[in-house]
Image 1 (cartoon, rainbow, N blue to C red):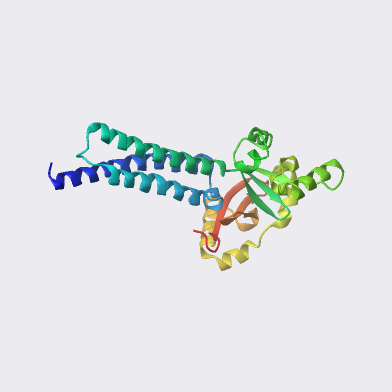
Image 2 (cartoon, rainbow, N blue to C red):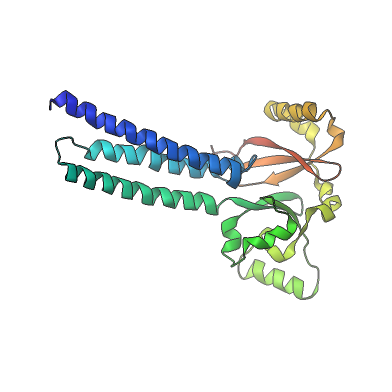
Length: 257
């Protein structure tokens, strides 16, 4: 076999590995966008950051190892061993990445004081909480809930103990969760100045105007409430009955892409 043929075969094997990896990555990305991080939660809750790590493993590490190790001069048995090693390393890294993304998926969006906050699955599961408990607030994920801070009694003591001793913030204390629909009138006291937002951010203005055109409505038909998240803040549009209509992406926070 000529040197050119060996090189061509090595690069062919690498290209086939890359295509196979791309198919796996596309399935993962589809699952993340459709089921784990719907709407704007993908960019707000770190979905992009997690998926970049998976892409580095699946689309770069695996094919690169094939390029380095694959040698047509080796025997069939040696090639199978090399391929098995590459597959094992890539699979382990990929499973770790998928697990990390899945555990950080938002399962609740909680209104606390003046803003909504996303709650990842890992935060509740770390407390030993069965996520099925969220079903009483709705089947859709993430579920929208309201935090009702206790003012006295055993509830206040438990809240303070979790917050001070176990460092569990109020928006991750499921005992404080209440149906958002029943407390929506309390949340709308924290509406944002959407006119100021539109005046200072052309992209957000375009997003809002598209929603208004689609709904055939005007700004006064909606409440605009903030969602504070790690990588990107969001403005949530609710109709007058408290139904979530749209989510408007704010720019990425400084230093995050």
